[in-house]
Length: 115
Length: 114
Image 1: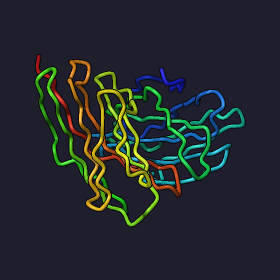
Image 2: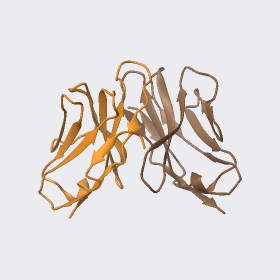
Image 3: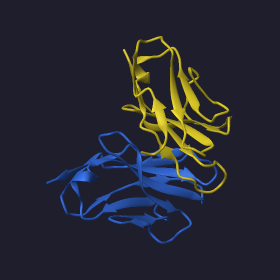
């Protein structure tokens, strides 16, 4: 158990819908990262938040957005869902995003299925 | 742009034997980190081993060790005394020293034969 929690574990929804994935980082971790794992694209970085502010962006679609709240939990919002959005979405957290190495701890993931 | 390439989609090894998973990467950065992550059937991402680019000594973690060839941009993982619990997808990954985003390879699925 990494200490990172994600809800829900599984989500099944229809095309065109909107969903919200939730992540609670490890206690004391200020950075949250979102990754998408799909058959087509593999594992790819989406976005990072540090202490409530967006810090880095990867291959995140405009239909997707995220935020980090004052209690440091984060939500990933996916809208106008398409079949290709079906994937495993991971959240990870780390102590800091300052220069240097801080291990990212991954949550168990949310499996999204778009039908 | 940085890329990570794993040329072996699948590999098999006999239990108790040694296996090496290959990885190459491309970067123009001098400060970076390399990782091997394990993803078992549970889908949890588990960090196996880490290598800092500035360190010449190859990292080791119990039965896991790496062969880091910086000039060749090669980073292979050696698993000794393979165990059934080692069966998983293994991802080679890269991170610059400038930011935190991790770039993953496509993965190598490792089968352990009893």
